[in-house]
Length: 196
Image (tube, rainbow, N blue to C red; front, side):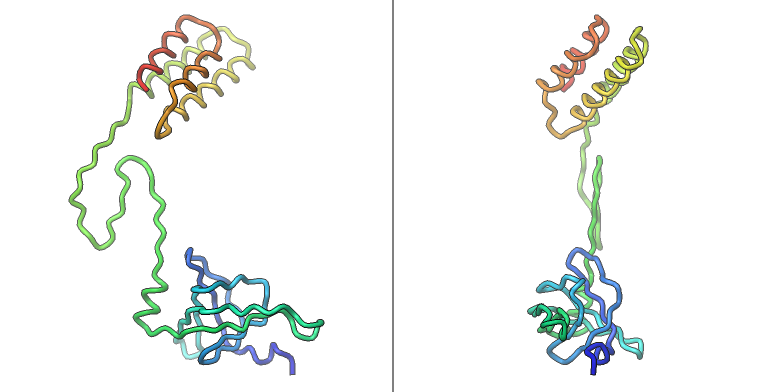
């Protein structure tokens, strides 16, 4: 009898980062799960969710993945997982993993709580206006298309440096020094450095 005929249960592997494997066939026992596949990585503390034909679900926590390499083409590589069955409250708590990626001024997440904080954001409008003026000045100068493109690229790097958490005056000064020589560019450049 082939091993695949014993795999009648439908399972999914839930990783700690929130990703979920596609549904797979396995054999679910009270203290172990047998998965005759090696193309899925199962690690300790991953969750295995069994979807039953009656619409219910069971959740198991992996204690030991128990991966075994294949044996001479007769037995394929597979998992013999040692698991712990989670009760409903434990399962709901374990499955609930929310990842928030936020950035920008005043970015925040309030999850079932009241926010009584005060946030102060300093957005340096003078700096962004000076960078716009620098771009406009480069476009106004009589430069070749290639020289303008290179200069605009340098201004883009200056802008990124200015947006960073700790901009380096030395780097910005060196970048400004690499721009085409013109009194107006030097003047705007020194203003940008002074605003850092």
